[in-house]
Image 1 (cartoon, rainbow, N blue to C red):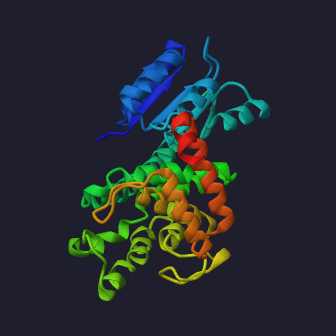
Image 2: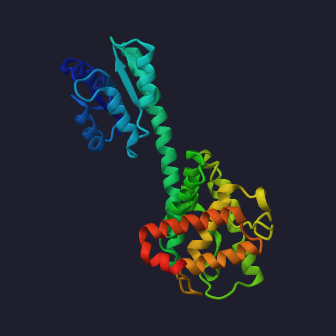
Image 3: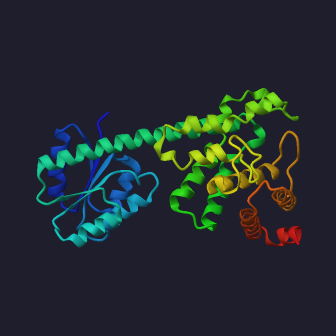
Length: 329
């Protein structure tokens, strides 16, 4: 299947010339005469590369580029800004808008093809990476689907952990890692038999040993993805405890990565507030009281738990202020 290129230029002659050259090289090509049309074509055509003129009436190329890069479906699509402008300031504006490369007018055909092929190779690698992530996410959701009691657990955990990360002022990369980890944290349970995973009663010592291997298995499954480098410690350590009695490595206190400590609190809270084979869902009030007792035993980071409890209270008050205020006071 030929790669798809979108040409955006308000000059009909310039569009026609580029389209002729690129079609001759075997690319599938569409064009757009202005910014709004370009954004529409991005949604329907889903190009692999965009050649975008900067100087256009109405919405200029900088703004089009910003919108393309702000849209999840197209943010990784390479954008080449084409310009007759030579000033450094314009290139800086282009970089800030998210442009991947620049071409100066008049366009040299050999340079155009070289840059186009280079960026298309990069796009292919990016697509392969996204496909690998999508496979892991699908596997994680299939594991979740094995247990009807955990429906929606991954999404709730991802959202709750990311919200906590934002509250603590973590970096964008760390928050993204928390979102990803929320989905894949239990992916290692693929190696745990249903007879253990879905057992309604307490596990035997041997069954517990098998269950406690799942963070290490999950880390191993996700390790080949370099983009998961901040996710791996969360997967491995989200069952550690502050006093060192957790698993798989028996880490204590600050040895446990902060992101893993955030996810473990979200994980415990979600388990307490949803129905499970062995218990009915607790209210937010009861769940937080139980976690308070566990923090006193030394299981959780006390300071972090206080921040987590406040986040839960604020969130629930915003959703149902009167009901939750009565429940907590």
